[in-house]
Image (cartoon, rainbow, N blue to C red; front, side):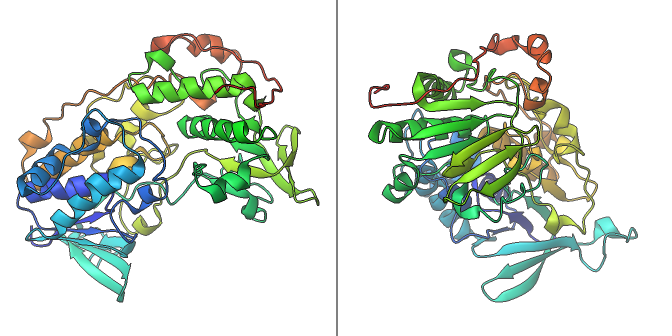
Length: 452
């Protein structure tokens, strides 16, 4: 390969791709928009992961770090926070990769365009033989790099889904942004705690992140009994919103679901079901009123926390040819296995370069971005993806096709759309996670006598 492999993103999957490239003697450049390795993870550094260290360290990366002789491997059985993941693994790995002959990790380098050198999207002739032209906005301004292949591991963190149910911001969502947060706030931060303690907080979303928010707010409620939550769910019932519990092979995920259930059903939340946000309006007293497309209103809201997932950014890939699932925006070959409406319990088949190959030869979307809007991605999935992809780029198709991955069951059997019709609950309930437990909407408050 005449030009290096350009890897977009110095997160766990991008750095794993670079580690595999080192083992194969391939030149590479990692381009990271942030100021350091795992910059996006730094924005949720306080959150503890569901996966243990054993699942969070790429095998090739581990071999490189151990061979260097200066790395202290963490306890394989422990569960780190995002911050610990960065400090103990990602940054040491990035430093090592940057010092490797033929490799570079560049920070503050945002990819703003990927195309074929000298050929726009319409040109067919000679396309596959030409290098990629990667346009980068960096510390020295705009530059153009030539690449023999491009591995896009940029993830989805920069594009959270909006509160609005149409897929766009709700009316008034942007105008009231000072009262709306996206993701999991760090409730241990005194400034953040002061923002939410004693307030009426609307939480939108039903996944693990929403559960983490409920648990965090429950802790605040022990300090200030006036704290209360309206939990906004698009489905007709709470159903399996708390996950698989003891049936969840991701132990910490199962525990989180149990903790969230205990917090919510012991006095924390008002469950507001079938709520699809249409509008956010200021009431005039500093509070907000949220309106649903079906006419429901949640009033006197002080703060809103939106945990409705993320979506990939394809804007800088407009001059390359992609084959994506029209619903998820994932690699098309993965869609049926990962769609949250009908996939369950870790049933993603082992996959690698074949499933991730795009019409643009030499371009691969990997990691969370390969899943599009589907939320059920695991780091170990991405590590296996890039092992296969880099082997294929090196011409070793035997190794590239030798994909062997056993995923733990997620404990989540039913997607949101399955619950749009209440009659579907009986049809899709059960499965490997057991029958969903119905929790009727109820008004409860959490006082100082709540769970300790």
